[in-house]
Length: 84
Image (spheres, rainbow, N blue to C red):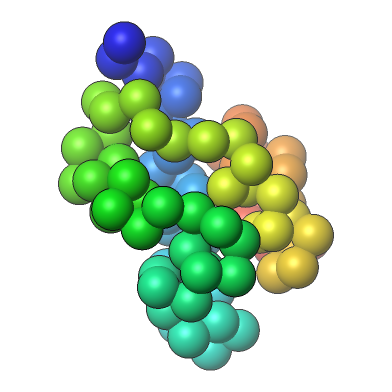
């Protein structure tokens, strides 16, 4: 099943936030994020390459909000600041 436009926007913001977290050196990289939070790296990378894929898990968002200060409102709506 293909993702809706809204889902694809949320997924794109997730990857954008991850890039920002990596750039800020809060985490080493994608492999570290996947290892720390039990994410299948192959699915993670395939999803990033093609937002139509249905492998994205809502649970991937949780560490961003809890550990790295990413705004849940921004992740879901795109409004406001990326970080709280």
